[in-house]
Image (tube, rainbow, N blue to C red):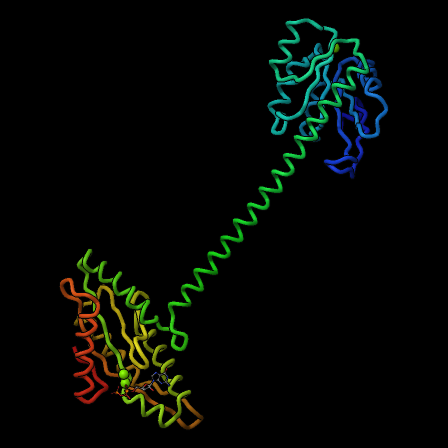
Length: 343
Ligand code: GH3
Ligand code: MG
Ligand code: MG
Ligand code: MG
């Protein structure tokens, strides 16, 4: 650091920033070197003061910006930059507003004192400086400075805590959203619960009524499912349900909704789909289910069939009426011999 030639540093490092053991950093700026030494001597030989001397105000300013001292004592009349200009520049620094500044000058006149105060200088002392008065004023200012620093540190800790709290709230919200999402899914098949399906049905119906885009529904029931349970056991029945749901999801689009309405009865909601297209989807689904083999052991497998009833939403029917229409079609499919689609 080039200031090394013109400044004498007695900064202690590793000291606490606040509290009883704290060392205060004081900067003295005066173009006359003997004056800086006199002021330093007047401050006394105190272990809790680290005093740095400057004869060049510009160098002092650079040092103040990086080291953020606790107090600045400056002369008034200096070539290049006087004490008033220096004080204004300090006040303009990012952390300069809170640095106490004392002006010590031989120009002890009302006009200069007023000018100094309006530049944000806190205390004014005429030269030659009375050591006792200087020490008293410095102690007062450092006391205020200490309170300010402690307040600021408390504020920083508070802000850090707030940030942590905000993060925790954010994480909790993500977790809650995930839990809520999981609560809307049937644990065995991953299809929507009946309740969630009906909620979405309401939403899709409202959208249909707004946009006039078609909306269709499939009622799907596994054929002779009781026989599967009876022949292979309940666990295999569960496996068949999971398998069925996976095939359904592969056949449907991402914005279609599959819900488990009861034991082995499912419903699919197909937005932007009229009854002709819904019938095509249902037929594809029926064939996919009938074609898939569920392996039980190496040479034993199971096949499933489903019956499907199709209905489209017309007018301002409630969801129950539309589901009832699809149910009637499903009933007909069962009566006509199962493994078929009726609309
Ligand atoms: P249909 O072709 O007329 O629909 O005959 P079905 O045997 O499929 O119909 P039914 O309603 O008589 O029987 C449905 C069976 O589905 C009875 C019930 O034990 C079984 N079931 C319902 N939920 C589950 C489940 O979560 N797991 C298993 N393994 N079986 C279930
Ligand atoms: Mg001078
Ligand atoms: Mg059934
Ligand atoms: Mg049934």
